[in-house]
Amino acid sequence: MFCQGIRQIPRNVNLRYMTTTEVSTALRPFYFSVHPDLFGQYPSQRMTNETSLQQLSSFIECLQKNRPVKPVHLKFYVREKNKDEGLFKLVNIQLNEKDIRSTVTSILQSLKLSTKYVDGLPKTEKFTDPLFTEKKTHYNVDFTNIKEDDPLFGMFILKKKIDLERESNRLRYWLEKNYKVALDKSKTQIPVRSDIKRLRNELIQKWGLQEVRWDCGWNEQHFKGCLQALMALGEQHPQPMQILKGRILVFAGFTGVSLDGHIMLNSGEVRHNWLDLLHNVKKYDKALLRIPLFEKCVSQVLRDIKIGRRKFMPKILAEEYENNLKKITTALNDYLSRRSFPKEWPKTLKEYELVVDSESGPLMLSHTGQIMVPASCPGVLMVNFITRNLEEAAKKMEKYKTNQYLEQSLQQKCIDALHLTDLFKDDSVSPDVMIECCQRLLKFQDELQPVLKDVCLHITNYYSVLSDGVVCIPWNWAI
Image (cartoon, rainbow, N blue to C red; front, top):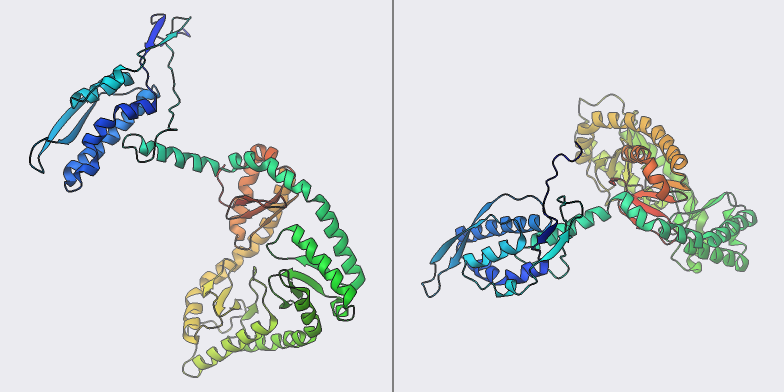
């Protein structure tokens, strides 16, 4: 019963096998006779030869991989020798052979081409089956010496490369390759993290800081260097450092005071620039005190709309933001000097939220439901955009409120289930996208936990292992 479907065959089986390189070499004269590039001015003949070459390529690949094949009829145009330009001969090739050597020989003979190369190759390989049963022999097709422009195998080489690239971008495969690298890099950073913790605590205690943060793309080694530089600055200039008491200090991409009142130090600048800021913090603070007044002006003009900040807003200087608010107020007043707000607007917009962005910012509705307006936006464009998006804004705000808590819950579940040291995301990754990503991580936790244990995972748009061992993966990964 268990032997049903297995055909008895002789003990010794002759396999007439050729390598991919041998096939390509043997058929080279054939390629030169039927290559589509020879028929550039004759699209019909070119198309016929291209199609037939593709069919021939598939037929040969199946033979080499010992897959079942059906007889195939191919048509090729060849140029008539010693005849006028544009005269062609149509050659019909019927392939019924079940082995590669016979197939190659038949193709060459159909065009009356020499088979000397094929005849000179070793003819047989003896395969002995002690059980007297047929076994399919699968050969790994070797494309090592074949180029992408090969007429017969080129398309398979390209397909193979695409498949390998696609496979290498699958999460499980990529993590298996990079898991040990990430752990090794993370371990080398343990002394650095210890120094960072010590230096951070010393700065907080010595200068009465509320907190010290790191908010730029550099690695932990650079963070340590910034902390050491600030410590040295404090020893040389203790008086200006007194302004830090009770403040939050952030190493970031610019130097100034943020909208939140945080002292921002550019991690790439020299200490002299930091010192200039510390001398002028009070001037920045004055601009910070004026901002609520300008925000209120914009709100009153727009029927009490709430003036918010982008949920994932890049840090911005207080003075720059103040100027942006002034421009928006002027644009709205110019609009109201000529016309009124649309009749379909509600009496109040207090349930909605407007974000005033930089001049180069987008005019858009964010995924959190915030209406984002660049400071350079004319009043008429702003009003028309708000009119079209009020309903959608309300829906997105409600959805964000729900997703915000779900996202936080799922992140913690992923940390616990996968034994991560931390899990965070890029600002560009929206809550609903992060929720979907976390749900899929939990779905495949049994497969992923062995290659994510003790990893700090960053959800972003690309694969990478950072110098400090942080593992970056795209939110839309495939298992």
